[in-house]
Length: 407
Image 1 (cartoon, rainbow, N blue to C red):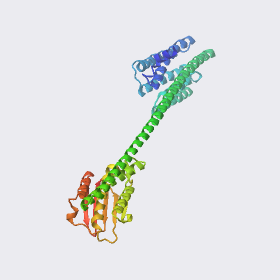
Image 2 (cartoon, rainbow, N blue to C red; image 1 turned 135 degrees about the horizontal axis):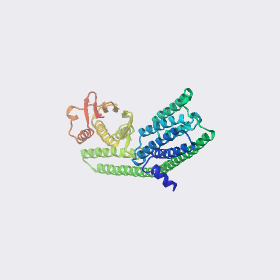
Image 3 (cartoon, rainbow, N blue to C red; image 1 turned 180 degrees about the vertical axis):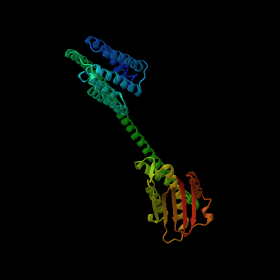
Image 4 (tube, rainbow, N blue to C red; image 1 turned 90 degrees about the vertical axis):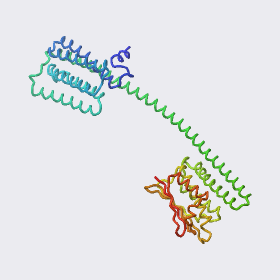
C-alpha cells in the first residue's frame, strides 16, 4: 500500500530518475505541509501573515509538483525556481514567526539538504551559497531591525509551533533518507549483478580465445608440416632429375616452400599468432639458405632497426620470399671468384616506411641481369608490386638491392 502510494506521488523507478522522484516527493510534501501550516498557524493564533504565506506556498508547491510529476519535466532551472520560492516564503515567514526564536531556519536547512541531494555538483555550490547567504541575511536583519520581528504571544504557542515543525522535519527527513538508501541498495545490487555477468562473460570469452588460439596454432602447425612434406617431395623429385637446370629449378622451388614453412613454424611457436619477429625470421632464413648452398651461416649478416620487430605475416611472407630469391641469386652467381663471400641484409624503419637493403661483395651483375626474365626475378618484381614498394639496384663492388616499402 505504502509502496503504491509512493509510486503514485513520486513516480515509478522506470519512468523517473532518482533525483526527479525526490523532487516530486519534496514538492508534494511541501504542498501537504503548507496546507497543514495554514490550518495550524490559524488555530495557534499566529500572525495572519503566516497563514497567507502558507497558502501562497501551497499554490507554488502544487504548481511545481504538477509541472514535475504530471508533465514529467525536470531540470536545473526547476530546482533553482523551487529554491528561490522556498527562500522568499520562509525568509518572509521568519520575521512573522518569532524570527530566531521560531523554527524557520531549521526548515531552510532541511530543504537545503534535500536540494543538495538532487542537484548537480556545479548547482550544489550555487544552492549552498544562496541558502547560506539568505540565512545570514535573515540573522543580520533581525539583529539590526528587531522591530520587524513578530514574537510569539506565549511559550505554549512557540512550543506547539516547534513540535509541529519538528514532527514534519523528522518525518520528511526519514522518508528522503529511506528512499536514498533504497535507491543506493538497488543500484549496488544492479552493479553487483552486472559485475558477476561481466566476470562470467570474461571467463567465457577467455575460454573461447584460448580455444581459438589453440586452433590457430594447430592450423599453423599443420600448414608448416604440409609445406615440409611438399619440400620433402620436391627434394626427392630433385634427386631423381638428371637435367641440372631442372634440378636447380626444383631446389629453388623447395627453398621458397621452406621460406614459407619457416614463417608458420615461428607463428605456432610464438605468443603472437598473426605476427613474427622479423629479425629472428631473417636470421634463420638466411642461415638456412647459406647452409643449403654450402656456405657458412656467418657469411650472412642480418641487422634489423625497427621500433617493433614483430611484423604481420601479410608483409613478412613477401619480404621473406624476396630475401630468399635475392640471397639465392647471390650464392648462385656472385661468389664464383670471391674468397670471403658476404651478404648483408639490413631492414630499417624510417619515417617514409621500411627500407630493405640486401648487398653482397660478389662479382656484380650487369644491367641485363638485373632485369632478367628468370622466374626468381619475376617473382621478386611481383612481390614488390604486391607490397606497393619500389626497388633500386646498384652494381659497384658487388650488387646492392634497395627495396622501399611505403608506410
